[in-house]
Length: 540
Image 1 (cartoon, rainbow, N blue to C red):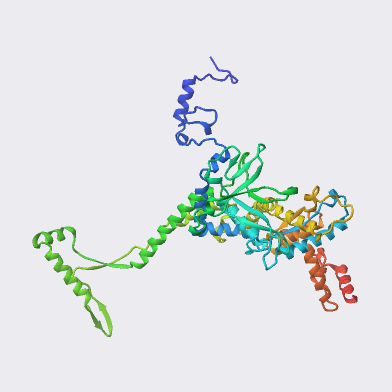
Image 2: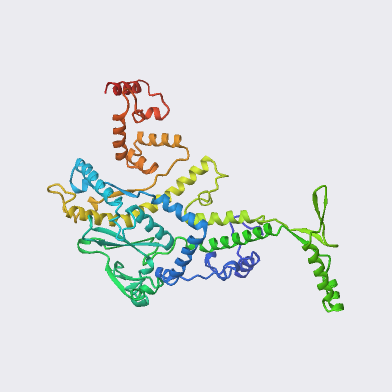
């Protein structure tokens, strides 16, 4: 009987399972990822644990390995340095944007307030006397760079805000080694105290316990290594006292984990393989040649058995005496070396490094670069196979990640410090609020609203990217302030002030490049508008 085209054949469960076994898949779960009968996954049985149960027990070991790699592995050190330089750079600073609409104040006040606050911040942050640092060792930008480096390697950045009465500005920041954040007396973690952090019923970190000295620092701090100090997260009026920044990836997570954790194993494998290849290459270079004796094992055994070893010793002595003497003749002034009868010259095979070494290293570095969030070309400094399109695409992708990390770090670590500094400036009267202005503490975030500026993106093709920037501004898709911050890492207001002074210093009749129109920048001639600008400059 003919089967209908729409009829579904009935297959017994046993036949179905047998077919799967024939195909190499013994399915016991609707999802292959959950199937324990598959050979490739049978031993892969990770556990589901809480975030702190995953992180806290092994955190110290992960941190120690990450630190060691950054100290001793060039790829790890270079990758960390590149990210710190690109995200924080040498002059990480706030671009104040007070929310004047939320405050019910004017845009004119906003501009004046911005200029006044930023001027005082520059004097404070860049003071060569280093009063912003409790230890007086770094400027503010340098402290931010150190904190970001600690976050990258150890998974978290910690700072304590201090008050030093006899400094020009009393607010200062003390960076804290994450190793010092721990439970008092080494107590075990519990529901309300984990990793040195007191946690409220709502899961809020309300206080931190810091060991007063590193346990492995030395005998001179032995007593302080067993003393802890409790510091509340916030003081009166909500002033920050402890700043703790880390990537929170799951609910209930208390401490951070090194960003290098997923690539520690591969970095160590690559490092070991590279060392072995280098050692082999050095040995091959040192042992370029050797002398081969014609005597085999059988001959040596025979000489030992017949003469009790004297025959062999006499033979070796004669060879040593021969090579210790000047065993050559001269023909026309040139020396011709001779060998002991029966000896031959052998050359060491110098096929090092191994043919597959470069491919192996490239594959490992691509994995490491992906883990760090940068491109292989940046990590390896290898641009031999890169064209403009691929470089541009890589830059856009990487810059998106760096921009997100910069914004996250700025809001989580830098902004609380800035708010504490601004509070002091307002309360001490250095920065005055207008009459009738809203209460500072009720609108603290609105007064301190900022965008943090770091290094610019840079250019792959300066001309094309400058033209694209001008087009975005011309079409209303961006602003000159945004473009200056993104491309060059500068403040547009500062740029304009400098350009204004340069225009005043230009010789009569000379046009400053800034006075060129966007049309000319986009490739047009400028025409009559350009001539008018020149005439105006000459008349002025």
